[in-house]
Image (cartoon, rainbow, N blue to C red; front, side, top):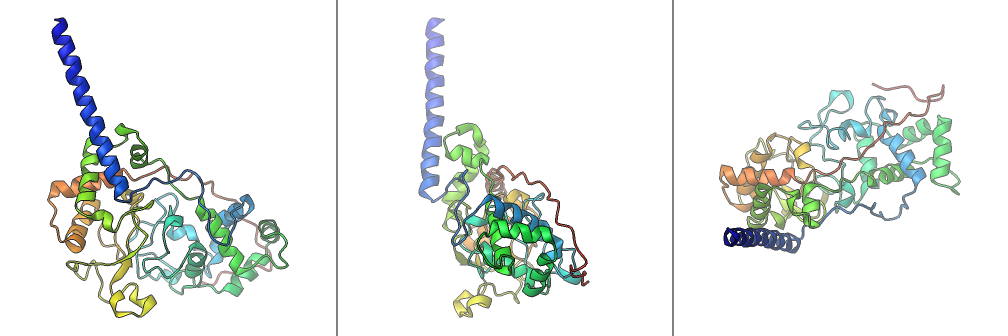
Length: 347
């Protein structure tokens, strides 16, 4: 009996050792492929020191629909922090019920992207914050009207003064964007199962998710989806090997070409960040695919020239579900009260 117990103990030790070695090997492979954890500390941004006063002001501005001409659309309308940082629509609904041309990207972890928007036309979150406010199909407002609106409310004037001390005229369109950027810096989602696993917690991912991760690396997905955000770092043709149909890749949207006017940038888009991807359906810039496993299969054919089996696509999708991190806890702010001087909504 003693010999049997000893033999069983040795066998269990060998199995446990092989599992640990397997995790260690896969972890090394993931890091070698450029996959990184989300840091728990807030990242710094260029030319905009992040302070508590800016964050608090930016949070109010992020939720304030009065930055739009109609008075009904806020940043949170299209980047809903309760639904993964986007609006879960194929394309967003803007001013006068107009439909936008592209799917709304998540604002969560956007600070880790190389540039903002699908075509990278905004170099940072400050620049991005200005775009939708002025876009006729989105919030349809003008910088001067935004400033008039903000200056009409004494609490905003006071808060801008505290957030930008020493400035002669702190209530400006530029400072509005800086405050929103400061708030968006806080919208990170650390401690996903994948992050915990990459930091050494072997059981944080299931065995199937580890199989999916191995496929994700071996199939070549990390060529575009790496770094902290597993994407968002560079631009690639959509349909590198085989272009999807017009329903997924609308021929009239030529992507980064609209920014650079360079022929080689036709149908080139920023690689989508994959953090919290399980929360942000529908997928792609056209927002036409609602199922994550189907999106994986489409990318396999379009980008890798590989027709994945149903099992392979399912395993990779299961791994991607392990990228959902701790969602930011955001309290809906009480906004400054309007005055007689506050511009009336223009519907």
